[in-house]
Image (tube, rainbow, N blue to C red; front, top):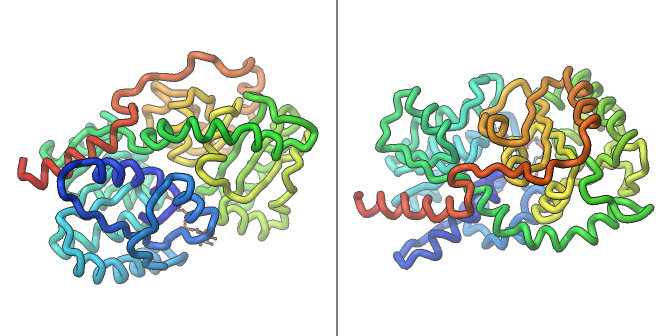
Length: 371
Ligand code: UD1
């Protein structure tokens, strides 16, 4: 694992392997792709994750430099451990780098969250998904559409196991703890009184397609200011986005006041605080992959500022709407015209049931036993 969205995906897999009676030894390797307290350590506390056995400390860099650094640093660790499986999750540069390294060493790779495709090769994650899936020996998928994507690419059915969504395992197990954070949080975000349940918007943005082009980011910020005229807008700002806002001279920290008409920008939040704010929001605006799934599970309306998604199930069965950045204002106007949240919006999606980690563990140990 290496980056923020990996942590909540690996946690249930580790727990499920520990819970097995089998004598499974695990070595937890953090590549260090994300390293700030609020991008990494806070998740270890919130998720109850063990301290990594190894931290490769690779840090940031260009795609080539970061991928190469993870590869060079992984190799001696894999050589020493010679594991039966190298388990990778998600679609970040660390996922690709660990997979490439292990495959070239003749080690077997299991990819959790395999088969997702945006079919958009301008996204770095799409390269990571395609290469990882074609090299990995065991492809553990979150939804049936992912199985179909892999089959279309000629990947043999024996390599594919539909296990469900591990990130939803973590959400289900930690939602009660997240809800207990609500009274503190709602007070903290609104000095004038408690932030109303279902009466505010929660925003995250970090994709290069939205934040690396100043004109696109400026237009999105204008649209968020428009939204803030109607409801409080809370925007925990990713480091990539903060750097871009700084470069544009837009102050990225307005404090935790929650004044009407202004977007409240704060540092990235931990898992429990963020989940609590997400579950109680009237609306989420994002470009994250994980939030499309979490809002779908929670039944919270979500506007995703992207041209495409590798998670179509969140649109077909969930609460997600896809809009290009040029269509954000119109989507916000439409969302504002709809009265609060529908109470029964939670869909039931196959194997998004809190047991995906157990299925991953079963697939790994079953395959270890040669079945
Ligand atoms: C990465 C993943 C993306 C995932 C996202 C979640 C890739 C290609 N991208 O994007 O799929 O959705 O994580 O956050 O792997 N930085 C810090 N502190 C940190 C980490 C990063 O300040 O702890 C800054 C650095 O300036 C860095 C920049 O953020 O250059 C981008 O970090 P990087 O890991 O390259 O990509 P993300 O945009 O975080």
